[in-house]
Length: 397
Picture (spheres, rainbow, N blue to C red):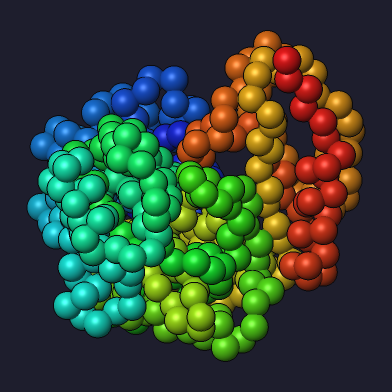
């Protein structure tokens, strides 16, 4: 039995906690919220500030852990790296974690290595950002926090935007940035993908490519994903090549990776790469269903210093997830929920109830539920998911 520490114990971490226990490991789950749902599934629950690296190192040392993992989140990546460094554990170092969570450092690494990446500037304040946009960009741009995830604070900046609106969007990005820095970047027009990866002893193993659906401008919140990709092979080859080059540019090793990439005019551009399992059930559910490879188990093995099994051991499906995003207002009723009983629905959940306030979708936390469908191929799974989205009616007032 190995001891695995899981940093964070929210809904996205539950599959990792449960899988680690299923594999026979002793799981210590840590979260700052005493009511975090994942704590009840762990062998030992620790309520602590998981962003305090010295406190978490002391806990890890006292528990004599064999590995640490921070799945589907980035808030404590540097803490995980710090623990790995001091205890000599498998996984990314604190230096790797900094490059993989700070978008400015990430862009610098891509540029130095020659990995394909959009034009990017790190701004010091709103006046500097406005000047950069006016002087350096002759096309649309993106404002984004230097450190955050889940589409928080991201906004498209169109040519011709007035300065007052630019300032409003800049301040929104700034408020969402954990390090109080904002990037302004080239806007890449084209389809978006993620690449699910396991890196072990320097070898980059691509498990699958995910097609992504977003709200588009101005906030680009993810509304759904499907696997395998339905795009042409030459496009997917370009996406995979960019992902591998990006992982190597960041010098990542012994970890799961989630690379986000867009393609414009046949050219792939790396948006960002996280040294972690992807969120939105991509790594924890979709990848296993579409490839037969248990990516969660592989990530746990890597964190514990064990060679991961990357062979397909289950059936392969076309799989799709879609998120419910009702019209803003007070939720009055939900109709036709019975359609969720279909044999083609693998999993579903509604996050809201009558009387709840439904907000405009500006980040992933504003979504109201999800459905995961499976079928013989991706196109059929997408059709089934989209049909459910049309049939279930959220009435707001």
